[in-house]
Amino acid sequence: MKHLFLHIMQSFVVMLLVLLPACHVEEELVPAEAAAERIQVELFARISDYTVPHTKAEEGIQTDANLPIVIVYKGSDDNAVFVEAAQATRTTNNRFLVVLEKQTSTCQLLILANPEASFYKGDTEETVAFTTANIKSWLGGTSPKSLGFTKSNLYSIPLNSPQTTIPFAGKYLPMCAQFTTPSTGITKDLKIDNDGSAISLTRNTAKVILENEAPNFELYGITQVRNAPRYGYWYAQASLPTWNGETDKLTHYTTTGNIANVNSSSDQTTTPIYLFESAKENKTHLIIKGTYQGNDYYYKMAIVGNTSPPAQIDLLRNYAYTFTITKVYGTGHRYLTDAINAPEFNNDLVDVTLTVTDVSAYETTAFDDYYLSVSNSIYMGFGNNTTDEYEICSIVLGGATLPTNRQIVLPSGLSLVGENSISANRSVKVKFAESFTSGEITLKYGNFQKKITVMRNTLPSHSGILDGDGKKVYYLYKWDKAGGNWQNFGQYLVGGMVENPTGDDYWIQLSPDGGKPTGDGSATIPPLPGSLRNDKYNISVSDGMIQIHVSNGSGRTGAAYLMTGKNPGYTSPNVYTQYTRRIKVEFVQ
Image 1: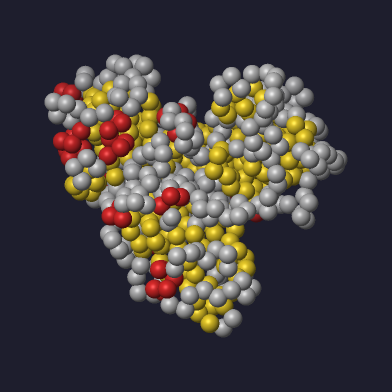
Image 2: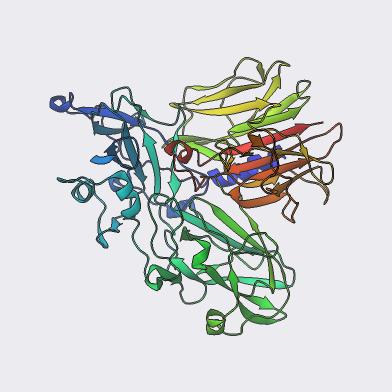
């Protein structure tokens, strides 16, 4: 399975979007006469795994206008007020810098990467050129605007109605992150990073792919996308925008033929479609076309999850959704207009499963000349894993050059298997000391580093409950009886997959949460065991909670991978920067 993960990682990263462009500036950026008032700050930024454009040839070359823009607000929360906006530059030795006014107290930085030619102001409903001057004019003045105001009113360029092309196809996707400075403010010692790791920038779109595996159906493509949002916030909102009652806020993607065709008759996978995030109440849906029993039909398909019965789901930013047709049961509509105007969806005629495989599945740190990707940044091992060697994560490298600094730093209690060098694609394998419980492996690669958290026989919460079949249930959350809410310890889960399951009753399986526990007891209570569904080996959830069910046995090793996302009910910037996390949970029996 190791080779499969390396192959998957390579297939993603060969198309890796290079965030910061190929222009060079001199090392010293601060004018001498302004040095006392302005600070040169280094910017470390990381992007997630899925990229646009779909092929490398479409990328083009970014110009100065595409460099990240940093907006500074003075304060510790969303009430922080605007101070300035500045655009980053790149030095000749591949350091990325932004020159900011010196500040002596906590500031909020809003980092906007891949800015479009224009941005949309929600308060005045107008589109203006995306320049730092226009940002200053909009947010500054005698009554400077707050960070909260910016989050609520800064949009991408609205889509047309109808939209006759796929948004962002062949272009770079807008990305955003928030960074909180220390209480000392903006000083010469400030690094815009995430505890030594690069900041994770999140795209403001979702990616949707449709593929067909039904033997009795041939897919032509996605003909239209209906009820798609026209507006996309740069920064994620506390709740998804619901515009189903505002027809001017929704649009549809359409063109002559299909908006997204399959690759070929033998490769029944469509080209990607990019959508602004959409609440399920918007009823965003697809019109697809294909051949069933020798005739062409259109099917009106709601975007649903794997629940039974299927239910409409939210489409979230920075997530990639693959919908797989597994079987078709009946005829659709002979004409496109009939499918568009049909009062009901055709999901009862088409079996579709959802796989969330691209949700930051591989975490990538990238600079212009090189990058490093890892399969996971958290490892949790359970069992007697001290007598053998274990793969903590896989590494894929890329770029035109190899940096000089390439090493692996291990904590006490772990010993590395193989050479201490990161010179080629490899696995990081270690042996555990009996006394080891937790620590961090640091991957040093050029002028950035990646930390891998390693835990052995420990979880943030208890794991002592059994399901109805006697399987032990592991979970990363519990019920806070006193507070009346769930505690997820910063790990808000959106999906998971079991590594290489064999048969329908493999010994590691995944389920959603089983519900809130009742009764007396301690302040925190384990959840009820969840019920297994048909997606027990590749699951997606919308409430942040996944359980791992493990049967008793001996002489075997298996693993599950869990993917995290931003908790929509938690707005701390620290959680927002942990958007792209992948957890490997390995069991040894």
